[in-house]
Length: 372
Image (cartoon, rainbow, N blue to C red):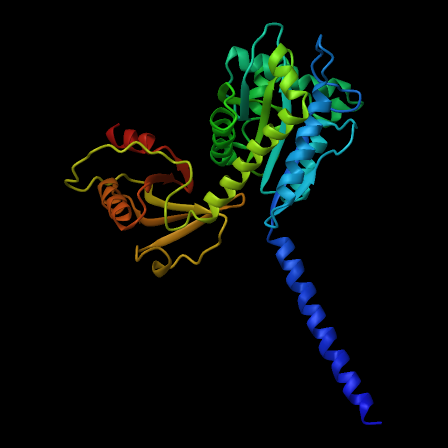
């Protein structure tokens, strides 16, 4: 009779330990860096037509599946796919998947095409600064909406041929452009440096697939399937694996830079340093200057001891990124002093930002208002 209470106690203890383990596993899962991978086109939308028989939808899917497989080997990442088979997805569905997952990154993979033997990689971020060439690419990528049954309802009168429509869709994601450019730069650097491929650079483009994704987002053109040599490379297993590995390495480096960012430098920021002698106060009415010292996924208490003893620490959250500031003054020259102090303390990339009526404005605009 005395053994039963012991069994009951053991059962309770094991149940408690199991619940703790389950909770820890759940928390670990929630803490993962979520990447949504989007294979362009699919189903009734094969992508750009080619004379060599290569299909953009197939190559994009194979690259995405290989990229996802590589990322999933790293326990820090959780991968979500917009499609894993040859199915047609409407453009607005792709961004909805990323938003529902509260993703940290959205990566859309495509192949380029041209009526010449053009070749090389390009990575796009959302923006309104479209050249004539970029507008042609945007028009071609966005026209897939005409394959959708209810495109009039889903896209609120958006016209892929209209520059005004293309400009309008770039506004909502503007807050994430900075982080998107950082990832895009790492992707293109890997294509050029590790794969020795021609990089055509980072470009801004008004693409609907990036519209309304509330996280840093890029669209990667992995090369031209219409080019004889590059098309064969992209259509090969070896080429797809190399492309996927280059993108994976860029994503890992991007996350690592964010994780290590606080206390070192601000990711992707290369501010112009202008020598300036601080003299008398330069107070600008209705403008507040702060010094941005860090940006990170980490939510850190804005206390002096967490930021090398700097004073008057504040933070704001932009998307999934926390930005940290030192100082709060209407005196621009005082802000320069705070910037110099931050740099000498251990934040070499610290830079000044300006706010007016609670909205961020360009520092040059703030200074111009003082001279008017």
